Length: 166
Image (cartoon, rainbow, N blue to C red; front, side, top):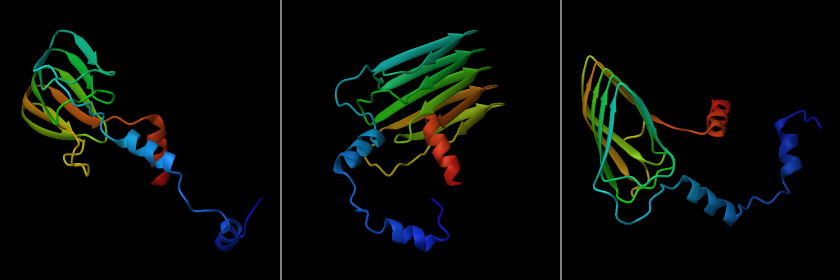
């Protein structure tokens, strides 16, 4: 079926109901909400990498503070499926001759207060979110001759749908 102009399409679809399904709306709210589960969490979680690499991801319970030491290493910390039990998480990082990447979901706030010497800290995650109850990740520490990237991890379908919009 081929339409000659926009008005033909409007006329053709004018009898469709414009009501949105409530189950769909609730499902979308749940998908876009932060993965926040009230309860107790560990006080401190420590990650140490020396001449090595590590990946932390999946559905893990986030500690109140993550102490991270990286020396001649590479690592990824992925908070996409993580379960937050407090509204503020601190990552204290010391990165020397390393490459580190922190992935955050879209519904989490991220603040970077780290200090660089001959290094790079790239924070492309949102620092303030419209959702007031969204958890906040605060990254503090040092990056010396290192790279620390803080990015939003999106699924392939979200990436493709956003590229079509532009």
